Amino acid sequence: MIDSKPSFDIEWLTSQARNDATVNKIKEIALWREKMLATNSFNQENEPFILELGGLKLQFFPYSAVGALEVYQEVFRDNDHRLLPDFIGKEAVTVVDVGANQGLYALRAKLENPDCHVYCLEPNPIEHATLLTNIRLNSIHGIEVFNLAIGDSGKEIDFEYLPNAGAISGRSIRTVPRSWMREEFISHCRTNQRTLDEFCRYHNISHIDILKIDTEGMEIEVLSGGNKTLSISDRIVIERHSAELRHAVVQLLDAEGFDLVHEEDPLLSRYYADIYFRKRVA
Image (tube, rainbow, N blue to C red; front, side, top):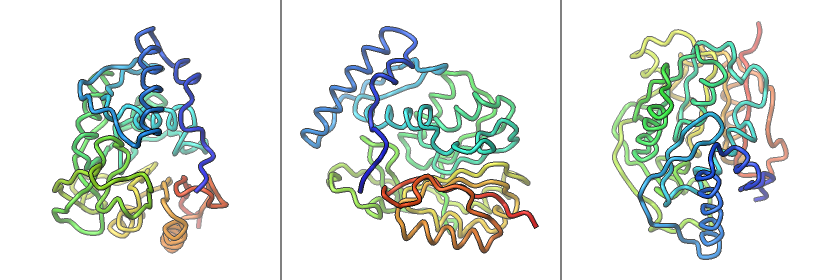
């Protein structure tokens, strides 16, 4: 697959740095990345460090810093999940972030609109812990965090994740082909899964301005457990992970009264891209 996005823009990343220590660490991470690509191996150090980027302090670990910094770039430079004006969330009251990762999308939402309330759902235990740390480091209020998977039923499930690439996790991360991914890279855990409808009912969520879903190939399962949630949602942005899943998502949401209003990669040249939906006006 062709990926049109540069994967590591060191010039832009260093421009975001707020001190020399952060600049130097970004340059070091770039060297780690070169070695990683050359050897298909990861830095094994696990001592966390803080980078000051933009207006935020963020925690990173050497073993996953390359991927985490690329996600920062996607959210803050490429505006992932936020390419349309009404998806930025300046007027949003409630945002639900399914697959919140380390919380970068949620943190940006709060920078854009400090008054919005964000519900973050992240089943990966490492990313969940980092998400909590990032909220604490920045003294952010109005973000609630839940160590939960979202799917088509409520139960305990087997869950897979890559400690070295925290954005990659799911019930079966082999759903998306990745030639570089070796079996020894994958960790396993048990985690609780709830449906969107169960989650919203339990937390008395009666309206969602923006529902963001990034679940590494489990999009249909997430939507299938959220019929009532879809009825109270205005806008949905979903990262799709294959052409087949894209078509299934569009078909399901069309039946639920949503129009496809923007597609990041309409030619399907990449295995992942965002698709945007608004509730259809009667």
